[in-house]
Image (tube, rainbow, N blue to C red; front, side, top):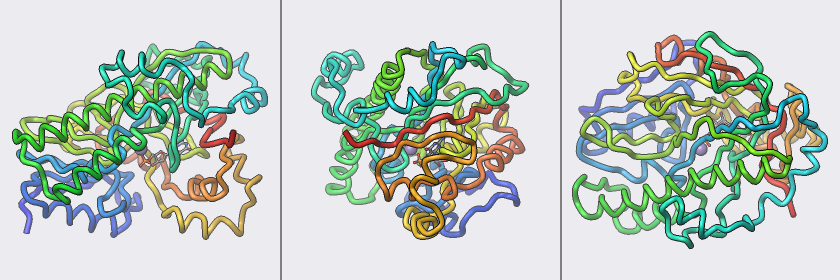
Length: 365
Ligand SMILES: Nc1nc2c(ncn2[C@@H]2O[C@H](COP(=O)(O)O)[C@@H](O)[C@H]2O)c(=O)[nH]1
Ligand SMILES: [Mn+2]
């Protein structure tokens, strides 16, 4: 039995798999979960649905945040005008980015208020899975607009998280408490929250360094327009708001990417209806196929070379033969429908649509 209120933000046109809805109901039955919200990118995860927000007045549940604490999206406007950007040259220059960053890691960690040796080897690297760095340009400016969006500029979006650090924190918690919740105010909860906040700050710094490394390789720099975490637990309305693949609607502009072969939306959250969705938004399109399904379905239909170009004409650097199939655009839901659902629910205004030019996932040294 549960007393939690349950709401899914999605129109009948949106495809939401039953397994994900079942996972939401399962989570709603945890002790003292008061509100559960599914967003239009909802899909099944490893036990916990992704594209969801959970609020508890009294408990913090680390397994609802998951292992990639602080994972999120950052967007930078580069100083390079599009007219000077050369795709072939950029593709050649984007090398050596999976190796540890050779800059002053200790100083950057200390500046961010973190221990100077915290997960230092991984800092500034993207990691695997569906993490990426992507160069984009403005496709369309919408009515809501924003002075920071210059259609003549090149942009970079970075999706990465806390790498092994978040996993270590979750593993430590599960070893001691399994999936039991932590009672807010008790020492064990404070310890988890302190480690969680370090991982969030580490992830923000990680995205910043990735963007700097990429922009440096193509001979420019940039200004950060936004950085948002979609895996987190934060204080909210006198309780605790867990976001599992859900973008915050209370921290300014948000990017909602589709896939490497589709558009990304830059949106401004609307505050009037925000509480209905626990002040959260879709964090992407959400998966339609699991990784193994994607590989099985696509491997006979497409060569690696096919997948190194997208239907939008953008390029893909991914030298992992499995990953290039697992993360193919076909594996994701329709981003345009996801964004329409958020608009229809009165949760966002569109600012701009961005088109991918080059997506970097990994390249061997
Ligand atoms: N523009 C791109 N979007 C992508 C790519 N790979 C995935 N995605 C989208 O990002 C979210 C991230 O999901 P998460 O649960 O891992 O945080 C995903 O739902 C897709 O919509 C890409 O290469 N480029
Ligand atoms: Mn993520």
